[in-house]
Image (tube, rainbow, N blue to C red):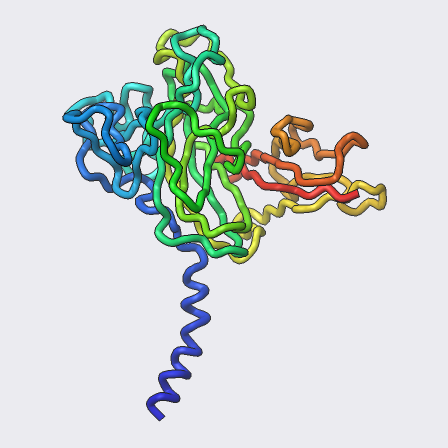
Length: 342
């Protein structure tokens, strides 16, 4: 009887336990509040492995590292009385309150050297990385998101903020760009130009592998990213395009339907003239902007509140979309794939 009661109890609790896994954030320290030591200056994230500058103390928000020898930054309000360059809201790169709590990270995904110099001559890029709390389950649906805000003192705007999920940990012993075509790209508005607000980027996907590492930065070859000069900004820091990041989240979902704002984005388009799935657009009453890219990363469609109507030159296959929607005074940028079938 005791065994039967135990088995019955397990049978009743199992669905609850399985459901409880849905919505659990798999990113450690997602808003960078926990730290090993309060930062006393910029460029203080710890390297993974051999420190190229021994004796120069490094810190890190708990659970996060710098996977290359570039110098991403950690900002926390605790640094205000120590060194304002690493504080919140005021720091070396501008003035911004945290999206949540009192801390965030910052990185330069695209460095163009000194102001007005040719960007093509530089390959320096900064990254932050974490090991997920648990590996993703192949075949399950997930939602990956982070919030970004462009810094006040950049010379350039960029579209180069990307997120890479990987089975193995990507690291480098120099400060050059990590090029990986498996990164989620593009995940942002063509140019991140908002310095006053946080824009939240949301990606929904089905796990193709048992991913265990998340790296944030730029993973595209330079010619596949865009930068835009910020005219009239005398406060620019070198030639950087610099962004703050906060509130990183990776959760398992039951579906790709967001009940919060009733937003649905189709994953297939069949432009055969029958009036069903002939065009591609999000089902929302909110204003939106839509960008469509082919498998080579080339922009083939963009517009405000304009659906994508594939041309005859658009061949069958997978395309990438990025849609920006203003909901509840927050810009949500969602990216994913859509299959074109003729």
